[in-house]
Image (cartoon, rainbow, N blue to C red; front, side, top):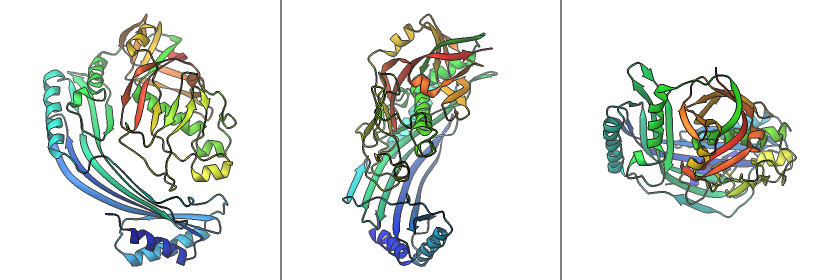
Length: 431
């Protein structure tokens, strides 16, 4: 149960201490978690964690503080005065602000309580099927948990939002091992509003296990060539997140290092690419109804048919840059194409299927170089073998402009919905 009086008192204490503007954010997280590994179901536990974040702005100076003891009213009052002391030591910036008044609303999604019996059933079934069909797969510390997250956003402008998002998270860490051979560790992380009937048939888990077993017999390729890369959904989410960070976010636009700083409503990617932030879509279980700034989120398409339609800015970033604010959250959906993954592979003369990319952060212009992990070599339309000791290099802006195909199949991770994307012109290096 959300206690509105706690928020009202907190804001009043901050204002009484001398703040011009005040912000309050409460998070109550209840979790039911069942852990398992390769041999058995282990720990069952229920936990809860409560935290309040308070912000104050005085003379355009911002301070922030968090606390977990919500019952000590005197400590809350003392923290309000601490905030003002911190403001005095902060740097003045006219762009520090809180969200404007919006109509008060309550939002909720997901099942009301955990189905513990079904969680146990799913884990037992997975362990049994792995032992029978995939004995080479070794499950490391894994879990299924039910999360109930309640949040309350209030500020001195009159904002009052309450949200409750209930969801299951499925986390499986695994590797394949046979005698002296072992694959690299890999992980699956999915969010769902409703538990599936069989984990192996859900979210690409069976395919991932089979690929891990394949990767016990990796081979290297000789030399260097320029070819195709088919990016898997698991890898695509990482690349899109990095792309957003170095081209579309606060930091790169404030410092004007982004290659896309003057590209709004201009073509920045291949015509076939459409990407949206979809924090409240029906097929998303990990919904986000309110931003960290206390703004009601929107579902936005920020790249449409290759044209940049919006930046991904916070309230501060929008004020600092003077660019339009579209309050959203990075729950990413990439529009699928019309060709099957099988046909995309068959049309590939030479290249790789990129399961995971391991490398440092790209340069501010998007240049990257790193190791292709959990990947396969493709030649003459056929998957030949899993790869080892293979490097790829290129530029993020360039690869988003070098899309040849997008699959009609997608993987719904609960926090992203993504297809396979085939690009051309990537430098691939073996031994």
